[in-house]
Each structure stands twice: as C-alpha cells, then as structure tokens.
Image (cartoon, rainbow, N blue to C red; front, side, top):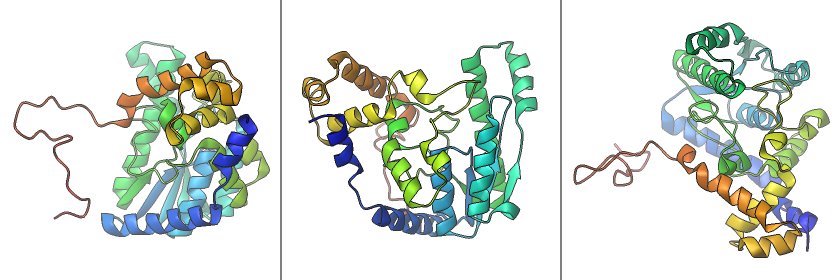
Length: 280
C-alpha cells in the first residue's frame, strides 16, 4: 500500500451523486430557512469556485461578493471573474476591495503582525457577507472543505462564520476532483490553495504538508479509524508527521464548536438544548 492507493480509495466516489445531493440539500435548506437566497464569497480558489457553481445550480437567487486586498493575487481575481461568467452572475456580483477597512483597524490595534491582520481580513469579509445577507434576506454559504475544517485551517468568526457548509464533508482532494467534474478551468482546479491573507501565503506552506498527504492521513485516521502507527506504516511516512496532523485536529476543536457555556442550572443552552431545526 501507499499514498496513491489510499487517495484512490478516498477519491473513488460518485461525483454526480454528490452534486445532486448537495444541490437538493441547498434547495431544501433554503426552503426550510424561510430566507430568499444565498450569498457566497468568491476568491477564485477551488473551494469557493466549486461552492459558487453548486449554489448557482440550486437557485437563481444568489449573490457573489469578491473582496480582494493588496495581498490578493491578480490571477485569483481573473479566475473569480471566469467563474462569475460561467454561472452568469455578472449582474449578481459585486467587487468590494477591503484594504481601507483593514488599514483602519490595523491602525487602531497598532499592529503590523501579518497573522493578526490576515485574520482581520477574514473577519471583515464575514461582516460584509452578513451585511449583504441581511440586506437581501439571504443566507451566507461557507466554502470550507473537510480538510480545512479538521485541520483548523480557517479563521474563527472569519471564513468559519457562516450559515451552512455544503462541501464541508468533502476532502480538499475530492473538491478538486469535483471541480474538474463541474467543468471549472484547469488553472483553478490545480491552483495551490491559499487564503491569500498575506503575500506569498500558501496553505501547504503553512501546514508543512501537502493536501494529498494530509487527506490520506485524515482519511485513514478518522474514516478507517487506524492508529498512528498503522498509518505511518501504510503511507511510508514518519509517525511524527501523523501525530502532527492529529495534534492539529485536536488543538483546533474549539473552532468547530459553539462557545462553551458553563452550566449553572439544570439545563444549560449547549449540549442539553437540542431541538430539531424545524421545531416550532
């Protein structure tokens, strides 16, 4: 066995079934919510491009925001506009550069720390998405995939602040394959993933591991429930790398949960408080 064999298992899914399921769930979710449509932030990367195409298949009532900053590559905006053309959303999209707001906040916080400012960018984009969603009576559609969610590679209350995550149960490598199946340009499908929160940033560079290998480890650990030692042997990688991925999942758990409420009564609004979404 090896990396490619594991990826073959991971990627061996029916993408037509996946598309139909996600599109139908989007339709159902919108109807149950009582809202009128969806807002999505489009960066020109694979995740947001796939999500935008899926949303366009589910409803005509959608709006696309492009929110570049000074660290956004020119190619990303070109790719974003190619997706807008593909889904015929020229009249349902808006370009809002965010540098002026980012600079104002940076001055008030008195920092040039690229990580702080990068997260400010993500949270400004979330604020804009929700402002337009409220204005239009729409829902904010998130673009995070399963790899990013498990590894914690997203900004809490930034790109993690959304109403629903349609591709959140698809690994990055699966999303790339899905993008190809949906007819996205090859440049988008093969583009190195990056939130572009600062110049030269790449996801794999920050994580220190390729998405192919990360996905294989995540799949073996959490889908096939294998031990770190078994994964190390199967993939032919050092066990410390497997443990690093496990540690990223463990330490980012707070990002995937609502804020903890300390229980002081007989029934706190947290794990005790579960009603169906359609409950009335």
